[in-house]
Amino acid sequence: MLANIFLFEIQQRLRRLSTYVYFVVFFALGLLFVLMSGGAFANASVDFGTGGKVLITSPYALNGVITFICFFGIVITAAIAGQATYQDIDSNSAVFFYTAPITKFDYLGGRFLAAFAIQVLIFSSVGLGAWIGTLTPWLDKTRVGPQMVGAYFQPYFINVLPNLLFLTAIFFALSTLSRKMLPVYVASVLVLIGYFTVGQLNNTTLTASVRAALADPLGGAPPRLSLAREGVWLGHGMAVDGAIGSPQVARLHPRWSPRRGRHGRRAATRALSAYRHRRHRRPAH
Image 1 (cartoon, rainbow, N blue to C red):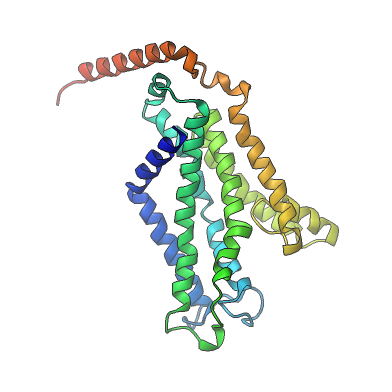
Image 2: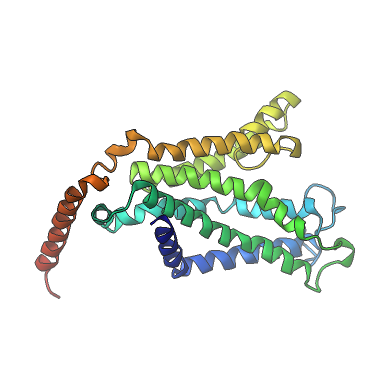
């Protein structure tokens, strides 16, 4: 059943225009940043703080481009992860899930994995756009080095995918627990504020920089601290997401139990009757 819900949600997302708009926008950003850093524009450049001495096809440059662009997709992450369960509440269809033999793990797990998979698809366009950008004829040839396939995947494995998993878990849990989208968007703003605040702390002493690097949820740690930082924040994200399956959350779905399906059917019947009643009372135009 989890696989069915996952595939259903993927199909629904692929039918939405917004999914393709997001893909094209981030593809264009990846292409644009590579063109800017490769000297395609005379009055605009990106040098990653190295004075233009780093090849744009180097792992360092590609990591900076891909991670930086994906970082600004946090609002999209909030929207997709939050809507994964809120869409049922917003459309007044959540009660009908109680009538089917679906466990809470299948429902929440399928929605969560689908939201994460769609985001992986969307943000993969950044790396694709960066690769296409390195093949364009407008770049300064002295800024282009040999192509390394691993350099395009490295930012995803080190920064992008762990951040997506952590943030999706947080936003998904907030939406499920609160049944509202406002806390999700507020949390996304707080994460952005926290990121810039921690960035300021990184300019202080070495001890403070180590603490700030570990406190940064979005990849500001140096390479020697990256694994430690990912472990800390992925642990936080999984702990919050795991709380959805705890007994305390039963109050959010009090009738979600295969042994009490008749209660769910009664609730669904009442909801359907109320919906039909509203339709009949709606004035004709």
